[in-house]
Amino acid sequence: MKIKPIIIAVFFSIIFSFSAVYCLNPKRIYGETLTINQALSYSLKFNKMIKISAIKLASASYGENEAMSGFFPRINFHEIYINTDNPLYAFGSILNERKLSNSNVNYYFSPSFLDNPGMIHNYESAFEIEQPLFMGGKVYYGYKRAILHRKALKMVLSESKQKVLYSVAKAYYSAELAKKYVKLMKNMVKTAGEYKTIAQNLFRAGQVVSSDVLRARVNLASMKEKLASAEENYKLARYFLNINMGVDVDSKYELTSELKTAPYNKSLSIAGLQREAMNNRPDYKEVELNKKNMKLGIMQAYGKFLPNLVAGYDYFSNGPAIHPDDAYSYAFSIMLNFNIFSGLYDYNNLEKSKSDYNTMIEYEGLIKNKIEMQVRKAYLQYRTDLTNTKVASLAALNAKDTLRITQNRYKAGVTTLINLNQTLDQYKAARINYLDSLYKLNLDYYYIKLVTGKMIFKKEGQ
View 1 (cartoon, rainbow, N blue to C red):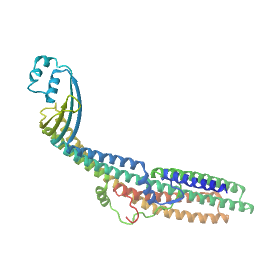
View 2: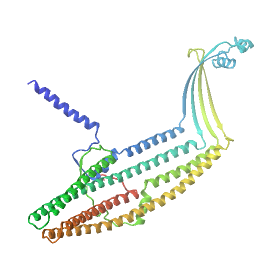
View 3: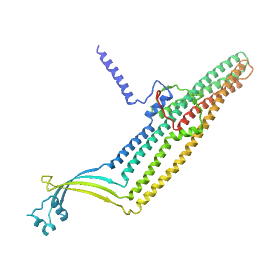
View 4: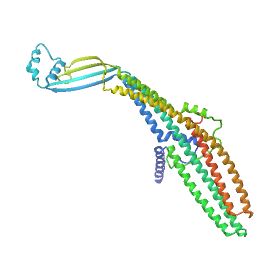
């Protein structure tokens, strides 16, 4: 009876431990199936590159708020203690404290006091408000540029997401291809084992020599070695996929999305894809936003040649002690500042802004040409791989049929084991070529999405 409470306590502590580990490391995937859409969804949640871009975007939002603060007044409060025998400060403190009267005016204006006022104490409190009225467009254009900068970083985040999604799709299908290699090599090992059995039976029947049995054993051992290598490559491909998704590298799951023989079910054209790219590519939109930013920079640089107008209000209290009998005063001011000459700094700043804008115009044309070339290359590669996949599929079927015929001929004693092994290698090469072509074709589908700016993951039903 005393053991049960201990067992129950241990049981609940184990459950709590597993729950705590799961909560601390929610990015581990274990014992699940994983579709391509699930892999893309995980990457949007956990990929570190996306997180870095999101942090930069959040920082730009703070920069926008900082720029907007230029429209608001500056409010300050100062508390100052002065202990001085400086005649100017000492006499000024007497005036600020409103201590002059008809009875002491002769004393404070006497040369003996003005030359040697002694130690004068003054406590001053100042409440200041400063409101910019016109800053030559510095505040206004600075705020507009901060908005454009944030929008540009939003495009950077979108671009990062699309690149990550493409890398995850590539890693996923690389792992799926490695999985297919493992399956193929398992079949090769099974087939090579069957050939060894056939060779042994034929040798016992006196139809082949002992070298056939030895050759069959060597071929089986070679296939097993290649199977082990394929399994290691499959593990590495899964690790790489986990890293791209941002989940724990030891996560385990079953890949369930197969390579498709026809990823696109619609007709494509280079002109149509290029139009989509110009409308959707986040990096092109980023350049357009940066170009607008540089143009506003020119306007902001022109504003430095204009005067600044600032209004201010100050409220003071002064006393010989900490506010027992303070004297109060205020000042309202409007300040006009006109910078007539700044050593050509403003002029050079304006010319630099113009140069930055012209550079961005040229860069816009350059990236436009780059996008058009990427789209053209992606389209032609897709068309080529589509044809190659069809040819590779027929070649794999032909190699399979040839292997079946050669196997029957070997059983009948018409051909040699060397010829049979060569035919098996040809079938394996044809099958691998077909899988590689299918892999490239599926990557072409996602690459077209990437270069047209449509590599955007949407959950089912959206």
